[in-house]
Length: 384
Image (cartoon, rainbow, N blue to C red):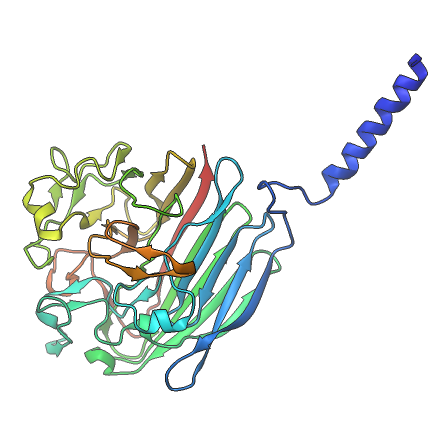
């Protein structure tokens, strides 16, 4: 082959490569990039016949998040590993019936008050409010029928700049014992850099307390237990609890305790420690006091799964982060025939502190008429 022919071949090869580079690339090992979009389909019916929807958010790189309007729940989150293999990294159910009977708060929004309120009661404006005692004599995650068990309404879905979905719920005055008519909007946005952003906004017509979070159970390996996941928390203190998981009011240093995740440490390394706090919770179920100052968005946690290379970072505007190691999961029939057992998923729940309405020194959870509650939490996925 002469020099002229060689030059023509080289030019042709680069031309073909140029065309390929402009076309959608096979970035994730078989999962082709596509246009960002929001799709909707039926997710089944409740016992009263109410039809429930499932929304699939797809970003420009082909990553997907499934969300249902029952409980404003994150159903699935499909992201690549270091080899480009896609896997669903959150626990969940195949249809709404699973969520309707779920006892583990899997994937859903918790409210009005995420986490616990001691004795199911608090005083606000000189009035004592009594709530359901649905967890060892305490109030947990909004009561018998919290925000995880109600139907939210779609107000907007937008795939133009990013795949996003907004859902709204109006909690009436007196619902589950809480004062005030409360309007809550939750917006899920799947960005093109593989981050799931959750924005919360709420307003009330009467002074109330409010603490919202998402209760997704993550497993970055896609299956098995989470004990080999490595966790770093940007928190030098935590709120120790009594035997019923109610904070004592102390802000205790993590140094020298099994709760020290100031460096990447496997979740299983000290989970069975003979430490009073670990015995109380049968593992990790603790609120960490984030090092961040004020209500600015800042990193709160990083998680690394060694076998897949998946990395998840958590950033939030909230002052606290509840780390739960799935201690009480047991024979849960999940998606695609999977059985979720103890410690097959972990939660990182951005929040205000548990029992804040009864702990004046904790950051306030009081929401007044005319004020707007806002929160942003971002779960971002990369690999290494």
